[in-house]
Amino acid sequence: MVPDSADILMPGVALAHDAHTVALEPQAQHLACFTGGMFALGGRLVENDTYIEYGRKVTDACVWAYKNAPNGIMPESFTMTACPSRDACPYNDTIGQQHPGFAEVSDPHYHLRPEAIESVFYMYRITGDSAYQDIAWDMFQAIESKTRTDLANAGLENVMEDSGAKVDKMESFWLAGSLKYFYLIFSPPGKMSLDDWVFNTEAHPFRLRGAREK
Image (tube, rainbow, N blue to C red):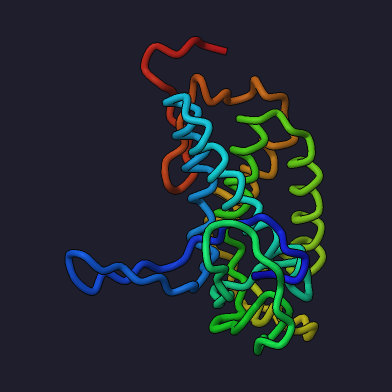
């Protein structure tokens, strides 16, 4: 449930209380944003448009969190207000919210994670929609403007405030994953084609057996 009634699907936490009961806890995590690309890639492989549409909605949810957080960067973990179903629903502005669309932010850090841009990259490659390049550029500009130091890029203490406080640390996945996906989304689609390469969970590319040399 978000102020602009966007048609998004944010991955949350499923609590299996017993063999027959599963409850949703609408806690979003930056780490879970890879699922947009996972659904879309799976849908492409098995020719299932429903999976690709789920991938779009999940990716758009993570993009929404970037765009609507105060500094244009999604926090590490937070809680949203779930709609009654998976369809978009009107926003109720009387509900308690720490920030519009963010019911509660449990961890406001930003660790330079790749999962959101990873899904944006997959959606661009799978759909060919250049709007995802515009999204990626906006994400990169927000991250670069807030995390750049004289030496490298640093994690952020609190993306829900404008303090600019940085963590004295740059995770290795910033170089191995985040920057790689930012680079590839602006590269020709044939560069490391998804028909020839697969990326593991740490964004390292492996050539598919029998893939052609380039």
